Length: 343
Image (cartoon, rainbow, N blue to C red; front, side, top):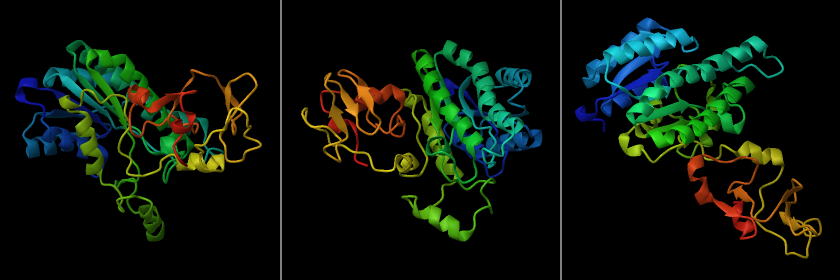
């Protein structure tokens, strides 16, 4: 918990919506001891969230109107926060927009708008606050991605939305490496289907029931479910959790990738003298040069090559961030059979 000895402010963008993840996050962070700054296009909504948080949790708060895609507006807003509240210790890049438009129908203007808000907006706010965090030796940055970034589309998001949210995953993981030595952690949260204003009333009961049946806990997520994960990532005690991507509520975000491949992943391997083509069900064969080759991809994998545990075309950040991948890889030649999980 943030105490009065470590007075810090959490900035949450796009937190004006009454039933949004952003507003729920401000409450979770305030309950953890952070003072709160809200940025939103809607000034009245931002101020309303700030008042609500202050009244309920007894913290200092500030609500400001700001377009996160406007560099000057971001600079002015962050300047006001720095002047009025304790030092910024956490940033939640929640502001974003979605688009269900199919790829063949999307216009360049719409594509650019999705990236402007989701990616450029996150860049501008993060770029403005990160230097101060690094200088003070403490920071918690969280990006709001989406399970659509990994599964390839979602219920309400098309290709543009999925691409933008995937960009945030790469942004978070790369920035985690760069800022980690300065005491600043960077993580991304990828929610699945959550009860918000975006989803309200847009699913018929039959489709909703089918989707819930695929969720292990058998319910649609609430905004508080996501907010609590963000607050956990923002704790001072979470300083060793860096480059991770938790919280989607689903069991198999990569399942569509498996279907595209057309068959489950294999774990068995051939003996040095037997080819994969002669032994169906074997995933690897050895060519005359002594290098191993993936039977389905025909891609040479030489000795000493390091491969991720999930060798399906996707490097999974589901259970650990990229900085922990070293625990989850095997060197080819040691035991390739264990480096691929069962399909």
